[in-house]
Amino acid sequence: MSVIPLPSGRNVPPAASSGGRGASALPWLAVPALVFFIGFGVIPLIGVLLLSFTSWDGLGDINVTGFDSWRAVLADPGLPHALWVTFLVMALSWLVQTPASILIGVFLAGQQRYRAVLAVLYFIPLLLSSAAIAITYKALLDPNFGLGAGLEIDLLVQDWLGEPALAMGVVIFVVSWQFIPFHSLLYQGGVRQIPRSMFEAAELDGAGRVRKFFSITLPQLKYTIITSSTLMVVGSLTFFDLIFVLTAGGPGDATRVLAIDMYKRGFQANLMGPASAIACILVLVGLVLALLLRRLGGRDASASQLEGA
View (spheres, rainbow, N blue to C red):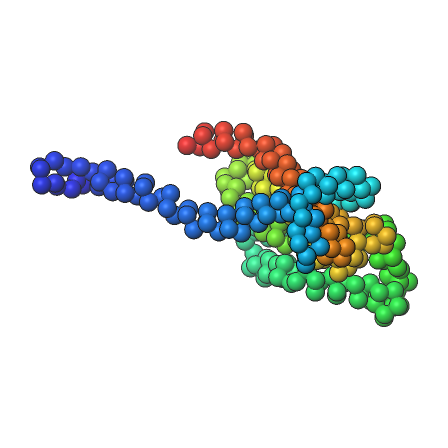
């Protein structure tokens, strides 16, 4: 090991001479991110929490009303329905997106050149605006002037956005169509991290593609599935623009998720206090779900990292 001569005649390794300065500089690297997080995350959240204890129409004076807004929101029979619709959209979108994303991600992890082109094509929906996607599908599904009427296909000529069950199906389909590419990219990266030697050993034992998928690929993607599911579940709580443009929460309240309920209370009824209370409920639900999903793989992940070290 090379050493650095000192005036006193002592020699110290280079790591010892520069390690202290490097270690002391590391905390400062997190300062910009911490400032942005506090400025754009913590402070607005505190403001919304404080606003939930007030009465404000968005223009006049802000009056402190204590827990009146919370009582009004929690006593509203529409809140359990909005929660149910939110969790329904969350569960159905997860059930559709996860298997499709895993299969597409595993397929795109191959080495053939055409798969790189397909990966680019699959990623295009994620680059589009949610509002633009909703407008496009709303036009395509129009029973009078849409795709079904133009092609004269009776199966497609239905009131897709006028029937509760059909409207929910359309929402799930459009949401999945837009966000499957992102999660497929996660699984594609996860598959490429699996050691090739595991597949070669399975091939020597006579395992086919299906057996290798269920015995090697799927178990090795456990933590990728947890990460993808966390992003999927928490992200589903913020679905607003796509559902608002597509169905506006209808027909009736069939697709009225919490985010739309918050918007209608705050910006249509000018009830900023109750709207802020719903926003706090959304944050709390997202935090609880994220912690639960993190707990599913947290201990095992930490143990595996220690073993690898």
